Length: 403
Ligand SMILES: [Zn+2]
Ligand SMILES: [Zn+2]
Image (cartoon, rainbow, N blue to C red):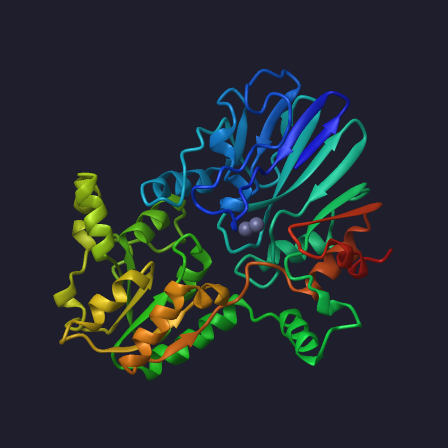
């Protein structure tokens, strides 16, 4: 997104569509200086959070163009680069909650916000008497919901333009919903399950199960890993995170986040087969050396005092786990967007589990706000103009605002 005032430009997010095939060339938007680094009026790129649809084109941006992102996000993306899901942004500086950043005539103030990516920000941009508020991706039902409630109860005043995400705005919001199913799914999204509810659901499942439970989730969804950990404590289990996930937790650099370490004795690292091979191919043995003190091996999966939960990138490991005669898997939990399950790899997984009689349980909540929360934010902020973004139905977002 390009914000321009006279000749001066600041870019908010520079994503690559998640739908673009891996090898497809996605051109940079035609903004002078992005590719060449030679435009003194291009003051920088501000990245709201660590999802690829917000930073994915940065490798094509010239190094001379300043770039800003939250520090935990930058660190997470750096460790994720080895695993093919991140990048070293070589960032110029870091976003901090409510600490204004001056970029030429623009003042950008980050607001830490609730989203499935850790360390995500909404951005207030002020320039020559005009005020733009960009929500970034957000929700109000995760572990940081209090931040959104604060924003709604005490919003920045005099917003000229509110650039608001609308992921969950669907055609069924319209009263002319195509059929009852559409209307029903809209209602379900309005009353989105919360991250707390996911934790409760997992606790119940883990308490009832007697064998190993595997929770498949994105390791970069740190809120979710925390939910699994809390459910483990409540059901008297220990948690093992895959190697990539363990590195992500450590990279977030927060004292409150459990990481495999002496300080968190109930959190361990399990290196999957795919990860072992990748480490070997790259001779990156310092990674496994670092993990050694808190690592758990396949033969130890069923022999611990407390039963275990594996959480993170374990989809590729399921067939190996099923093949171990000593391992009994009570359930596999799909804790990601359901759409991935209809892809060929998801279908293969579902039928593999079915053939082994292992239940596939769903426990997930979206990273994006439901309609009711979108509406509350828009109504609270009373912008002069509402600009929908991150939605397939921009025309419908206006129905949620006041005018
Ligand atoms: Zn996102
Ligand atoms: Zn997004």
